[in-house]
Amino acid sequence: MPTAAAIIIGDEILSGKFDDENGPWLIHRCRALGIDLQRISIISDDVETISDEVRRSSSSFDYVFTTGGIGPTHDDLTLAGIAQAFEVDLYEHPELSGMIRARMGAAANSDALRMAMVPEGSELWYTEPKRFPVLVCKNVLVFPGVPKYLQAKFNDIAERLGGEPKSMRRLITEQNESEIAATLRQAAEQWPEVSIGSYPRFETTPHTVIITVDGRSEPLIEACTNWLAGNLKTKQT
Amino acid sequence: MPTAAAIIIGDEILSGKFDDENGPWLIHRCRALGIDLQRISIISDDVETISDEVRRSSSSFDYVFTTGGIGPTHDDLTLAGIAQAFEVDLYEHPELSGMIRARMGAAANSDALRMAMVPEGSELWYTEPKRFPVLVCKNVLVFPGVPKYLQAKFNDIAERLGGEPKSMRRLITEQNESEIAATLRQAAEQWPEVSIGSYPRFETTPHTVIITVDGRSEPLIEACTNWLAGNLKTKQT
Figure 1: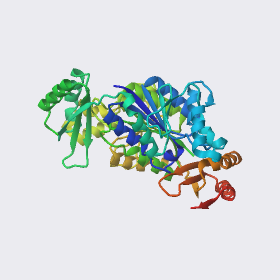
Figure 2: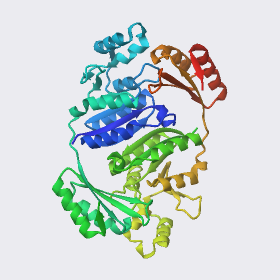
Figure 3: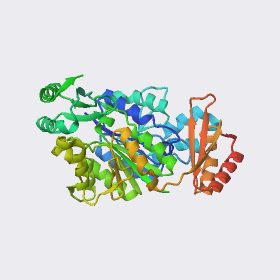
Figure 4: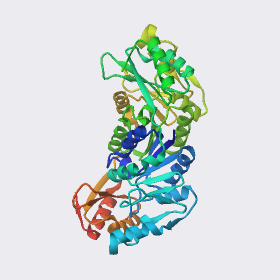
């Protein structure tokens, strides 16, 4: 199952000017595709910060998805940050600058053409011929910050990412977490291939704990879930 | 203005089992309090991952807020991660274990008492005597993952954080970002103390760009906003 990190780039999110829609969307899309999204960072429009985050994530995960910071204004620093992370220069990509000129005509000034200045070694992933391609620098896929454009582009290339959907079972108990902790720990040790979560819910009366059993092997998930159901006072949902 | 990072700890968020409510709440609360939240990370329940993130954030920001991972079950690893980040051991804090025993009575088993195992050198910030205190390890404030408990505890100690609210002005233009980029860059160079953002909105017709001018100095914000208004085709909002 491929692993991934998402880097949401934008002071406008951190300062509360706009709500982040991209993190939640990527979480649900990755789950459906079977991509193991292991980290999301929301960071500032700052070349040093972007570069550090890209470098660390690129070496730890199969894919890194960035969103935001790729327009023509002074606060659009994602491509500079990625170039710095990989210690390469930015250069004008002829296919991209050609597309910008074709689309904007005389309005394609030097600021518009900054959007074609990409890190050396970048590839373009084309899928839908009418749309701009997705820029890929090593294992970093660069997406726009505008949610509807991010979503369209991500869906265009989603099949190439090679995900494998996981299965999950849920149990619910009215026992409290301290009572069930020893049993859960025992199950976690016995089935290291599955992932067991425990989530108290205080909005219901009586309070309940939701127990989740996640993984790729259906027989192991089933064995672990059945064992837990036999050793706790639960109902399966 | 104090800076801060938030670390949201929980596989349940990354895997899409539960939506994160804590990141968005902290963004808006920090904005209102005048705390400069510069980073949010959503990370896995893994001691190594928590430790790395805490160590890096603790040295870069005035405050670090963690949420989640402090219950009694095997997936609650926040305190172990913080201890590892600061290279200290966990020890049973007598005030905390006393409170857990007083509250739970005979049900305070060794798993419940794990919640009193805290990094050496931790402080307890008390405010509301009826509630559990907030655990503070160096500059890391440890909050629960359950949104209503996080919110109550954060509000209890919010005044101690010493924030200074920022001001913001907004302008709207129907010019596109490439047309206005040079003017925005010039303003950013002329007023380095203010922060200028540019956000295209595609859900309106005609498309607009929202320009924000942020900072702590009212006169500088006003001067910059007026200059932009005079040099772009804008309306102030």
